[in-house]
Image (cartoon, rainbow, N blue to C red; front, side):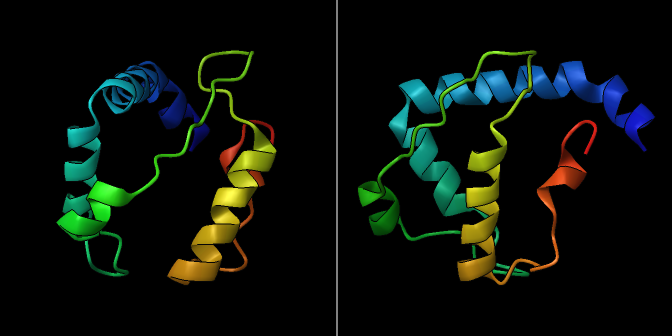
Length: 100
C-alpha cells in the first residue's frame, strides 16, 4: 500500500502546492470549488451565498519535509468531520501519517 503511495507523492505534493497557491490568490476559485463539492454520500457542497461569506481558514506550512502535516491540526479536522458530517468515529489519523 505505501509503495504505491510513495510513487505518487511528487505528483500529489505538486497538486497540493498548486491548489494552495490558487487558494491564497483567487477567492473566486475557492468559492466555486466549495459550490462544486459533491452532495452525496454526505452534503459537502454549499450554496453560492454561503460560499461568498465563508471565512477561509489558514493552514500554514510547517517546517519539515514536503507534505509534512501538523498532527494536532489534522486531528481537529477529523473531529469536525465526525461531528458535522458523520465521518466514521473509529477513524485514526495515524493511519494517514508515515510511521503511524
